[in-house]
Length: 211
Image (cartoon, rainbow, N blue to C red; front, top):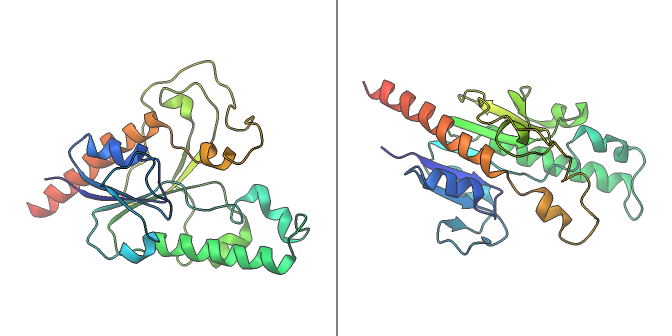
């Protein structure tokens, strides 16, 4: 019995393909077209399709610039070319997007996001703290990039392959027009663990309810 899985805010197809490879009915969704040209990609605002009967929602990389703790200083001292009003408006927009995903009518939800500041938390409906944080080096990638997951009815991921040679490659990327794209790209080892572990947990739960 395959799961209907929506991978929101993903254009690379990495997480979608991990679930597809395990036999699930998985779809990615983003405002950008799919990099791999897959017909398993929906190019819309993911909020438009949250009511379409999904078993599991994985939000791969939502816009988080104004929510994350590392950028809270911009709310009081805006970067060049921005005003304080714009910063707070962007914060409201980001919090509304996170709220829509977190409160979606879907039984199992996982949202990837950095640690949030207090202003973001206060704007999110039914906010709960993140369920776990992981590192790529726990899943076969010799890199450092802390990733937090907000989890609803899903277990924390269990590391699959601890590796050495840990480097903050993503943090040290050179500035450029495609830096955001590479920074948002998901790690295949973590995606595989999601498909294996969350897919199995969701199927076990579904069979338990049916019994």
